[in-house]
Length: 509
Image (cartoon, rainbow, N blue to C red; front, side, top):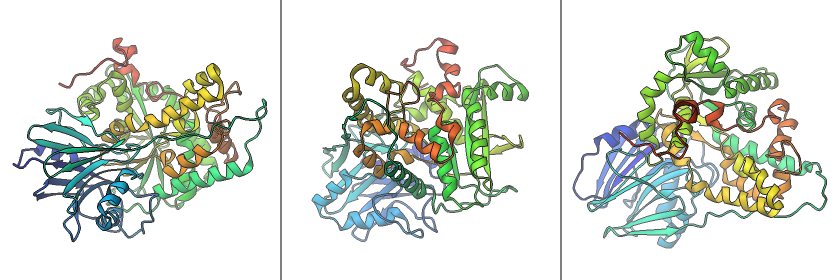
């Protein structure tokens, strides 16, 4: 992972603060290349290959690549290799037309800036789902592109449905992508709910396990921890819900038994100046804390040889207010009360400062890789509005709602979440948003993924059935809960605290 800065301005500008902000994302290396096309800067967080690969990358032809991403599914990357280097070799070998087509269809999670000597253009953009942040600030002097905003400037999210091409005459061309996903609209022949066929369940298990595998394998050891505890490379953003519990379960099946897995759970306490005992007692009542404790016990029974470290991150009102301005600046140009209530739990989860549930000892999360269950609701019909859509208009209206959710993914909040989570030098990975999984799920009938003819728990039916078959019986019965309510972050600035509305605008100081 890395931070990216590019500016096309011919005269050097002072963007020292922007470099400092991007270096939080990538503290291991920083470099800038000054070229006739502009200034290319990368900061690097070493997560791939045996040794750190310096960026920006440059080919023998003089092509330049700033790459913030991971190749999981597009092509095989040997453990000892760096995916950015392999990607640059591919891009430099393509014809002009093939280059544009390749960048238009880039599907693995990434943001990039690429200068091509043959086209004399600088291309920049994000993957087709927008899982990595990239922002643009335009002025009469040129274009400034960055992974993180400087709040003194005006920024807009780079649209993930567009590949941007900046010509050497400073004209900007926007190439439109087709990111739409069409679902199988086959309607069940019978009115009764039937069991999911074994072959469908087995295929789902295989593909989901494979995408988790690719996201937890070959993470390099980055430093001595200075702790008597074994090093931890992987953590799960953990509410105890079915999505993240399944991710943790599959990761445990894949990783060597000797490797611990951190499960990071965040809860907020609005009580002013609480004692440690009061803080922990109040946070222990947060809905997500309670389900997390239940879920880790179930995981431990299924994986008796695994060390699961449940990291309880308790946030006081004072701590929240101290960090609030930083969170607001990171999530910009997202700027509503709702954005803040969703960004805050992610920010503090990534900071990772809490205590271990078992020993009660203070602890800071070690893992640089965070796994998230985000995407399961969109792909498998997990939102309450999906049930409402079915009740209003049956299968066709449900299909419309699901397709709309999937089509909106590139324009929603993944860039915001990436900025907030990466601030503490960690990278988040989303198994449920892996393209091979989304493609396969789009081919199977709706009623196998979600069936709202069931009065209860018809949402994410396929995932719930898989959970039961894997022994996650308690997790399979948990209803969805919004993060801001489960962690109680909504009580810090939301209706419970200041009567603010979710769509109220927050101004940057």
